Length: 259
Image 1 (cartoon, rainbow, N blue to C red):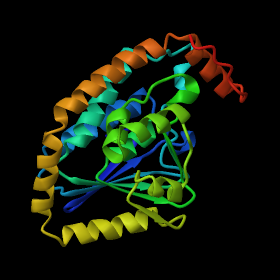
Image 2 (cartoon, rainbow, N blue to C red; image 1 turned 60 degrees about the horizontal axis):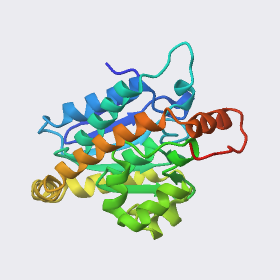
Image 3 (tube, rainbow, N blue to C red; image 1 turned 90 degrees about the vertical axis):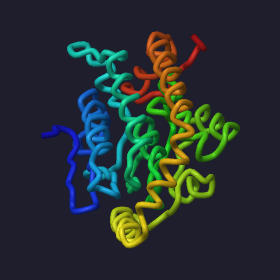
Image 4 (tube, rainbow, N blue to C red; image 1 turned 30 degrees about the horizontal axis):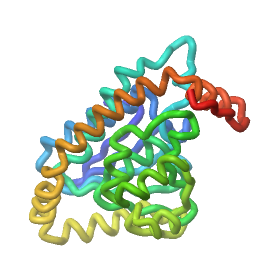
């Protein structure tokens, strides 16, 4: 049914796997649309109460697919892509399930936005977590500004966005960005154990509390997504963005000029 993700339902538990391991689960336009479709389908599925999100292969997700951004034969339609990014962020935040992100390897850029949108985040100690859009002259999208602010507040959100700092599991936990750190190779095991614990709890009331808390913030998230979309379309036209992606592909340090 899906080309880039896999959704498996096991009773009241569902497992969503980002499944482009050959590309470090980098999100191309197809994956962004499929993630939005999956989350929107789960919004009406009352049989599922817990969702684990994980990545296939050696990493969770390297973020947006930069190679697709510069492919001259199949140029990315940024306006179209941003619609899907907004859909997936909004649907994820309003899911009537408790969401668990199991992070191994990298969770960068849009991959990190996806992680931060989850209710419970477990990361392996040597994972690499970064809101690193700044490296290619872009702004966080997928609700990245909103989810960061919810976790750590505005002052620290700005610093993390502006620096693009790469953090391991322990550093991210110390900043309040995630909920737990486990040894390498143990994130999915821990996520499954936490899911089992949730399913043995009065989870209907937990989901009701999530809905009460999130409902108050929906309009704010929608406004953030609108502003992120507008900013991203504008940033894609800057010289700094072009320099950033060329430097990335050429494996050199970018020389930004503020334009």
